Length: 453
Image 1 (cartoon, rainbow, N blue to C red):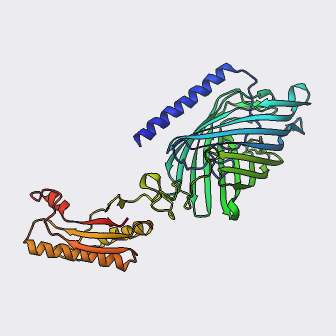
Image 2: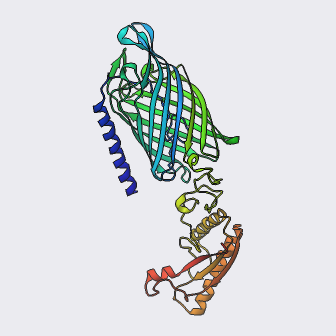
Image 3: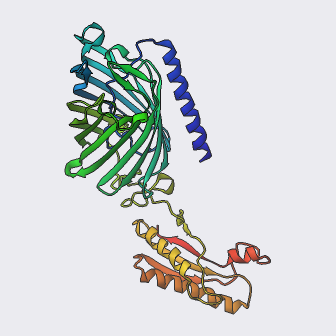
């Protein structure tokens, strides 16, 4: 965690320094942008939302989204409605890469291929423009993994770099830093994601519209369908913080939906559309888009089978039907550690001097059963009981055999489904000094040795 905090902090500092340097090198008209809603790098299965999952180091995605927005910005001027940006066709070039299993960098470079713009400075005469929008740089720090934890959690600082055209409302002429938090819940075939954040912007008034710092929000779902299709739906919005939801032009919102097809090669294609449900700056009458993306498998051939989708191929995944983490060989994070020739468990407690399991000992064995069932390659266990040297040798030998037999019987009653054998050794095989309380506690143990793995 210390390494994560350090690398995350340096990454945020680098992001802000880079954005500030760019802002001092370019000058244009101070403005706000009609590109308020843009596809998120590092979005996972979503559209404009960031997901919470960061996979393996150096995993990456590269892609593009071609977006058409009809009338993303119009406002009232002298009592009449005036269109500012009527038609915008924007090509978003997207790239994200994982620097560590918890840290991802993402980029969006928007090229406005066609911008039908009505210039307020020339009595709203029409211009057809090709523009560059403000590029976006983001860093995603995964705090909770949505696959192995009840929910996923990530924090995403970002900044736009002022390279766009403020005059035509495709740029802001300022570094606009922001931060958002993503909270995600995943099930087998569906997921839900909430993004909440804050965007810092200069106080700008143009054509009678005042834009300042913004509260951003979004809620989306992704549902897996047959034939490797995913149905995605989202509501995304923002509002000026000092007058939250106080004016429609300052509180744009849109609803979008898309269908995405994923291929085994790592290629994905999508098509979708949406409408503005609160016609503020950037929320169009209608929107349509198509996209294509490719992960590293596009460049390394067909990926190995991974039927639980946890990023660990089946041939090395000890739990191929249960999503887990790479550091635990594809199994869920647990205090039951399956090693090459044995299984490590917390202490299994019995009643004093008896072969009767205590309640917390049963809980440990229940988790052991789950761990074994998740590993179809594991065929058998030898259960060995051990004691300290308090008491006679025959009594301790008998107690250790009975305790090992009790554990075997309990595991069989829970349907562990593999071959089990048990034996007891009394105090003949200590692993610590029997002269201390700590040493005797370590010697009172049950060992699990893997057979025919």
